[in-house]
Length: 500
Image 1 (tube, rainbow, N blue to C red):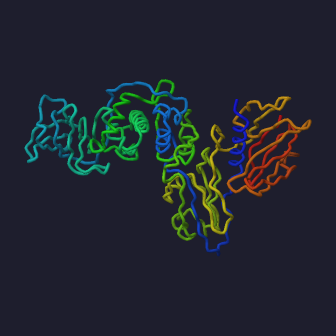
Image 2 (image 1 turned 135 degrees about the vertical axis):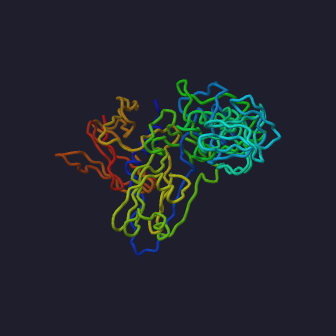
Image 3 (image 1 turned 60 degrees about the horizontal axis):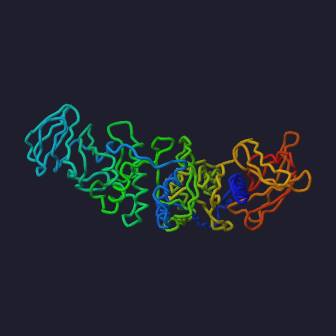
């Protein structure tokens, strides 16, 4: 059973999410306003925080401990070490290369010291010498392979930013695409240093290796290749991306994958959590919720330069960036739904002539924000702290259920029992007969705010109790047992709760 302090944290978080819609008061159009975007974290917030992994490794935790913390209910398992992946290097109808030993599918040997060209010619692919002498032709795709333990040099620039890079495995020209096909462990050797500094502790690099390997085999696209060599998948730089420390981490974890109920997972990772990761469905909107991609507490990433950050705008410059989302003159950006962490899920861009509802990821992309864990503070508004995540162990729902009834009960002795339904939405502790105590917190700027407790009478919600939150946003009130209530704070009604 959760501790009472943990339950209080859950209550605080839920009431805050329910009440935290209007984060930015409307400013007079004539005011000269500076807007500050106060934020936390860097990235999409799903899965493993790389700076968090660094902090955990510095604290002595193992790669397995790091991974099973970020991916709930998972284990690290041994799997197939021979599996191959296909990585797009660039879009091109020809490729010049050296270092290949074999023309795959033929008995022809190639000289590793010679330079060759593969190019598309109608429905065929032709292999020529560097001077244009035809060596072979095949219908469709052509593939050449490096000797075991060696690599092929691919001339020209790839979309991973590498110029004339070396790649293990095979190089294929197919449908106007230059593709690197190689074993997943050779692929991971070219990934880890592109995703984590090679100087990081071994446990962090090992965790990155296992996560990258798992992601590599679960994120296959439909088409001729599986992975991009950049942040659309994960950063892959071939042999030029390898270092002794990262190769050691790959070797130490060879064939290891993060699995849930025996299957490799979508092992998403990102830079900086800001203190808590997010549920996948609240960052990748429309994604199917996954039990292993749930929000978790992350107190280890404070070494990141983007653990906390801020960006300043004038009202005019912010309006220009928001573009057509602003109807009239920009007045505020009001967050209407946050996730668990609490990253922005949806927000209203409020203008003098109306409002536009946008998603947190849309807002992040339009403004170039580090993360969707953000709050916009106008200079003529009262100071507001950045919204904080639930404390360790809390797992608050991201938004109140519509019309849901959830009970949190007490025994005669006042011991808190497990709640039912969608989470703890109110806490009731034994009080005088017929009454209990409801507690909550209004944030991010709840200090001094009036909280109204309402009951439904004759089909209408009527306020029965008004209580003012303290400077930290916390409030406490007696409530009658057995009566359905809802809390209204910052003008926003919260969930319906039943005190039993």
